[in-house]
Length: 245
Image (cartoon, rainbow, N blue to C red; front, side, top):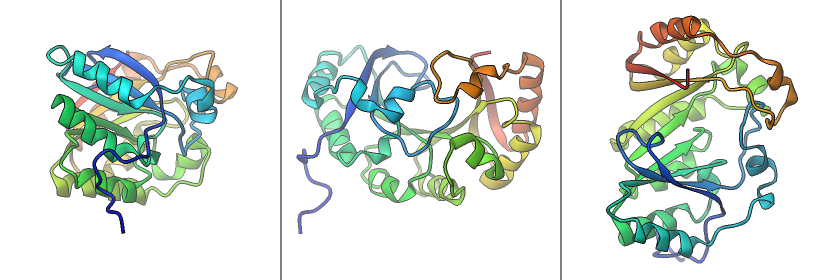
């Protein structure tokens, strides 16, 4: 049987976007951001609907060209952020991470919705992953309404356990969608996760290109209410920062 952890597997990443420089995605690092195609959730407020529903509408980028770009940016970039979509759906994720590390030595950050702990295990066990941003959308009961799928919240808890067991640095982040994320929801999230080091509350942003038109009608919270959410989050997080407000 061919082992899973093979150098440069023939299965390539389905890369549908590249943001060449970001100062925001990897805290304290200068990062290139890779966007993978496809997702197993259908969050109504998603700002990458075509990437999620119809990734073929975006030009597929050659993996080797991405690696060559990163090699040229050594010394200018500290890291690579792999986002999406949901990157853990990619069968070529581990081999891509190997190529990044061996070719550039850059740190690697992964963005994930936490729904695929089984897929995370081999990635987390590789020693290649430096940082993870874990999206926790809302409290368990509200997940189906927000994500459009039947979601098992215990998968998020298993994802957290893997990160903690492997000693991988991580942050939790929640987009504060009115009607779906209130003070009680933040409290319920904390009951599920236990104490965490970093929690980011992200302002909800209305856009003309969302998966669901219903979410275009939602007015974002004001800063005063976001501060109340932050106060609640600080009951179970060492640090809580509001982004985008």
